[in-house]
Length: 92
Image (tube, rainbow, N blue to C red; front, side, top):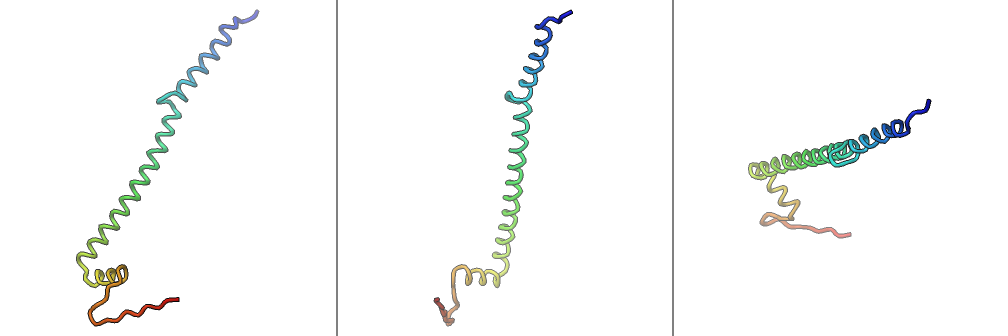
């Protein structure tokens, strides 16, 4: 007794089509995985930006409140000197 080929292969085609539909179409498993990766990378970027923002805020507060630190930063970063000081530049 032989089976009807339509029944035999029809079920396989139906299951294959449903799997393809679930896995690869818009809103499928592939999109879901891609979206999860994107969310993870954006979350990491946000955490990095928040950490940098906190550090910059702390630096700003320190510059506003600590005059010695402000003087040190200005001297190092911008090369400022006090009245009466001499600057010696050594070149190689």
